[in-house]
Length: 70
Image 1 (cartoon, rainbow, N blue to C red):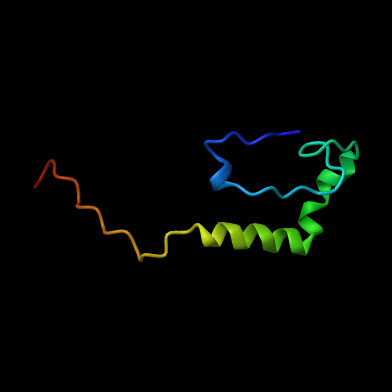
Image 2 (image 1 turned 45 degrees about the vertical axis):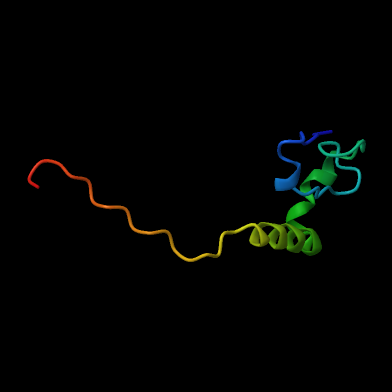
């Protein structure tokens, strides 16, 4: 199974279908195809991702590059 190292553990969550051999000790390769149909797992991922977004407002506009014709 895939293991997340300590540098990234705070930036990830474990979302693993039962018996998925990619992220568990399971041997059911069809389990890896179930994520798109699992609403609860999708909601968990969306909630995690949205909780890590910077909602401080839009980034300031970058100054136009100076160059030929300025």
